[in-house]
Length: 179
Image 1 (cartoon, rainbow, N blue to C red):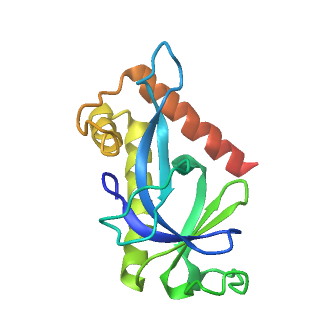
Image 2: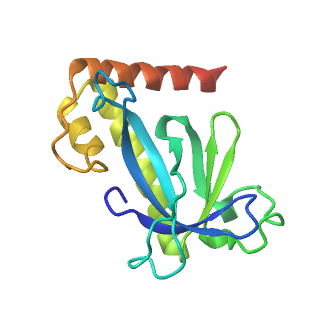
């Protein structure tokens, strides 16, 4: 999921569902002083042009993204109370619903039910493992996990300041969920 991404279909207000490449990436700072400072993990998707997944070129559109720590739930479509009449082409058994803490919902569809379960469990596992290791301050595991979506996988080393920033972000998002 992290390097090449997973092909999914994104259902939105766009007239037609869009084929996307869905992956986990560590976002870096926009600061000109320190452009490579990691900020926090995001789920990112890019719209693919027509054609097979391997041969598809990414369209010129900007990447869409969700901050990993903003996710309040992720579930299969058939397990949710969502009314699929808006997304008639979506198969609830293959669908992945991501709900953010602000109430926004994103609907993706995998090729089959097994792939949907893999995506859901994979995101849950990554978020749980990353959150646990941020809380206990394990920079090695966090560096390893967060470097997977970068160009130079394995080269990222987090400082104690980076860990503190991510911990603060995690705590802030958790506090928002409680209020």
